Structures are given as structure tokens and as C-alpha cells.
Length: 522
Image (cartoon, rainbow, N blue to C red; front, side, top):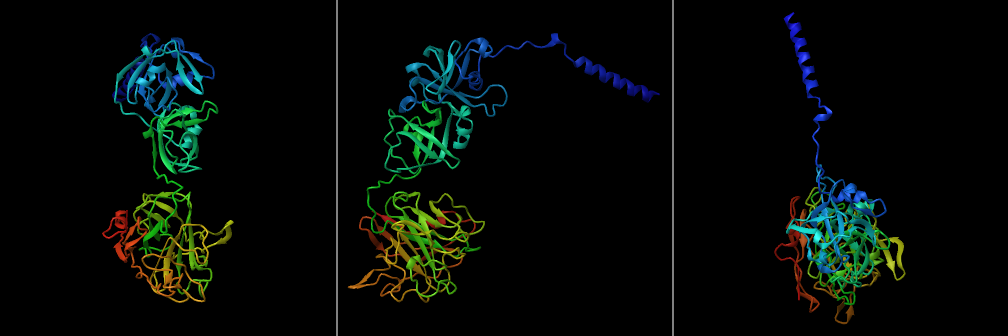
């Protein structure tokens, strides 16, 4: 009985507690509306027609506060616009960062990025002017600077997200990385409306005729910081860099009128025998002896593998274009490389085979899975033809006793006697390398010469052209050293074969900063 009464008393007590916790209407606390409104809520007020910002419209708010992102010192923003951004005060602020333009006239130029301001917007008019949503009718005296030097919030941008939700990004400060431009790289300036592709899609960049930095040359790639504003004519969202430093070229700009020298690119090393598998993990290292833009002047790289099982058999009737399992072709048609720096052609961007260090940060001009796809097309004066040069191969760079080689040509049109920019051979001599008037063409470098006295010898293993480096060692990068004088346009220190052990955890420096690495001087 006592247990029964105890249970019922507990139930009754719980019900009393629940009922007593319920609030009556008269118990609600009367809240005070905030005098501040966020940019997110301001932008929601605009439905296509201008809006007078009364307290009734803004729910008693009279002010907006935020950080200044506009910078008029570069003269590439619409005059008179003070652009600020802020997060919504209520909630966690996720996806509430928005920008807004406030037209205060000439005084806008006195504010700089990082200033924190409060603006009285009551009585202003929210409308679109030249495509830009802005608050007009605001006096410069309505703006009060609170502090300066505030770290700017930078919105992650991509072409895809900007175009998907343009209103969300309008007026926001952000950065686009890996911006690829075309068509007239290094020839035209950045002035005007330029189309860029960041890998997710295409978006426009706007640089006006009044911008201080309008004469900067258009590079192949750049990092662009700025404010997202719509075009006055098309209403398409654009990124507007504010000052020169907002546009940072991440590729060099090459003067297309400068002719190529006799050896614009040289071979400096190769990785022919990875620890795991050779298939798709071999690569070749080159160095430029002058600034190069492969969109302006296209190059071709060939490899040759003359192992016993390589077909077609016999002498290479088409030279570097023999194809099959004898030669493989890579076309170099984009990217830039500065004088005296390395660049790479090969398979996966890994230093030593499966599971090894990612070296994507190196300057890869071509990364092609040669075990999965055939080599690039043969070219003649009419352009690319049907025939691919090279079958799919699991062994791009031979590591047997038969001769293997690498050549780089400063053209896409390569015939039987075209001279490469540079060429090297390694391993043994093997059979069927030169004979019956055909072979692999060479050039005048530190290893070979096309003439012996008055006698032509344009092929490897013809006459005195017998130089070759040692058979590659397992898990070691072959580097060739030597010094090339760009002024004299010749080798002043002959290349010799050295190796650097490569492990799965080796950094890029193992193949670029070793003792005796190739140098380009002058």
C-alpha cells in the first residue's frame, strides 16, 4: 500500500511541475527590435523594384554595420560606391556572409579594406543602378568609422558557385584560384572583359579603362582577388580586381616576338625504373634555357624503347615517328616555364611509383597515362593526322641493355631528319638502331654532332654519335648535370650521368636540388 501511494504521489508531483512550468500569455518578455540589419536581410527586401528603407520595411532597423572591402585606389570599381560585407548577427552565421554597395559619392574613396563602419541607412533607397544592387540617397555623414585594420573575411569562390547563386556572391570579396585565360596569351592586356576558367567553369573578369593596372599582360594562369559585381549591360556576375596586387600572374608572360634559340629546352633527368611498376610512373625532367609558353610555340617530346620485344622490328623506318612499341609521342601545347627552371613530362605526378610522394607542385606540362592511351597524333604541315605515334606501353623508358632515348623538338611537325632541341640516349646499343639510311635524328649538343668534318651524320650511332648514359638503376633518379650557357647557346660543362635514390617519402627537392644538378647560366 505504501509503495502504491508513493508511486501516485510521484506522478501527481510531476504533473504539477509540468503545469507550473507552462507560461501564460502575460508571461512573454517583450523584445526590443535590433537597430541593425544584416546585408542578407537587406538584399531580401529587393523584389525587382526600388525600396525606400523605412523602419516599417526594415523592422525598426536604421543601421547596417560591416567591414569595408572596396578599394578605389586602383580605379577599377564604380565611383562613389562604399562596399561592405557582414554576417547575419542572429544564428551561427553559416552562409550568411553578404555584401552590399552604398552610394555615398566621392567620400567612398576615403575608406579602405579593413575599415569597420556603421552606416545609417534609414531613408535610403535600395535599387539597382547599372546592374548593381545598392543603397542610394545616403550622405557621407551617415557613415561612421569604428576601427581599421580588421581582417577581411574572404569568400571561397568558384565559377560554378558564382553562376549558380549570383545574388549570394554579389558585393562579396573573394578569390579565384587557377584561373586559365585565352586566347592571346602574352599579347593582349587584361583591360576589358576577359573570360577565365578555374576548372569548375567559366566566369568573367572586368578591368575598366580607368584602372591603373589595365596594361598588365594577359598571362596563361593567374590568381584573381576582387569583388563580385554584375555587368552593367549583360547582368552576368564578374570578378573585379580592385588594385594591381589583386591580379597575380601564376605563370610567366612570354614575349612571342622573341625567337627560339637552338636549344630552348634541354633534358636534365629521367626516372626509368620505379620501385613498383613502370606503367604510368616513369617521367622525364627538362629545363628551359629561355622563357617558354607552349601555347605560343608548341613542342613535342618523344621516347624510344628498342628492347628485343619492341615492335615494329628492323631499322626505325620513320625515325622518331616509327611508333608501335618503338617510339611514343607527347605534345606540349599549354603551360609556361621560366628560363633556368625544371618542367616535367610523364605519367602520374608521383616521385617514386605507387604510393610515393605527390609532386603535383612541380611544373608538369604533360601528365599522360601512357599505359592506358596511345601517343599523340603525327603532325605534318596540314596539322594532326590519323596515326598515333606509339601504342599503349607499360615501359616508356627502357631499363634493359638495348638503347633507349629521349628527344624534345621545338615543333609539332617532326619528320625523319628534323633536328631536336635536345636528345640523349642511355643503356646499350642494341640492334636495328641505325642502318639503311634511317635512324633517330640527333642535334649538335654536348653529346652529338650532325657533321664529322665534311661528312653528315644526322642519326644516333652514325659516325661518332655513339655517346650514351648508363643503364638506369632501380629506384634511382638519373640526373645529368652539366652547365648550359644561354648567352653562348651551348654547353660549357658536359653532362655526366649521376643518380639520386628515391624512396616513397622523398620530397621534390631530391630530384631538383641535388649536388651537381643541371644549371643554365647567363
